[in-house]
Length: 392
Image (cartoon, rainbow, N blue to C red; front, side, top):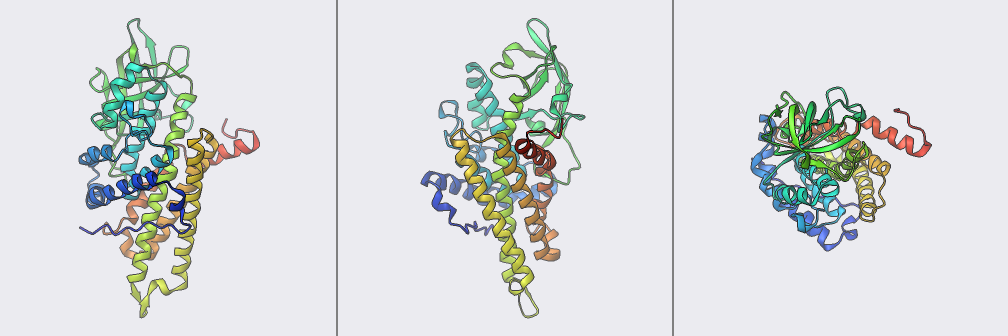
């Protein structure tokens, strides 16, 4: 078992812009990842198993709903703290960060923002403590980038709703206790429903044979005449804007998380380049390797500044959907490019499980697609600056 020697790059002294609380929150997450994730994650990825043993630890470091008020079990932290936690967790593994992102932004956030007081009291404290795990059902087999075309639907049956349909590519689905499911009513209006494990007709088959996010549990949500109590409808917002607002929060976390993956690849490549001797000197002495490393730290620094400013805007309630899309798209692209360059610096060793780079590279192939594809985010920016939607 290799020791986690990670040292976080901070080329522009960005730590000076963080509060003491921010640094303490990040430090706790970083120490936990080094202690609990790094020693087991390669084996978990090789076995394609989500390490459920880490759920309680994620809860302890505040990774589940960190910005949810303490009254509902959250940590009551700000958005920069949330971002820093996601950065550190994804430095360990994108799949583990996916689990935390789904729980926080796609399950706890909509319950907090759009749920009743009874729903908040019932679900949020247990979700924050990791006693319950959640999933988010929006994507369907035939409706990914166009979620408004969904066919999952529910009908009013008097004392309950009858839900039918299916969702796929759902993180946490195989073990979720509750799913926030988006479906159309009889008038075609999209609403959120809380579907609980054990409801008759609700099943969550696991998705196998993934080359990416192998240490994350992915599956489907299938609804076959599921009777959902009327009290499980999220009443405070409907329409496509409701699930999209959840995606804004998740995409924000990804913008930070991708930096963590990039940092880990850069740190691994830098250390290797200093130690690997060829032609009588470390390969770090060669111009082409220095070019790769210099470009990596430059792009990481730019992404750090982009995420930090976005966090400030989020704290002020000013961050727009388009700004979040830009950061998600830029930072994930940055991370996947760095992973590929870092792999080249390590040569053949870069493809082995002795190092984290190839695992990060495979994971980022999913991250660059989920929560809005790379191309869709580009078109969101295009629509924002031109006023013309290219995807409608």
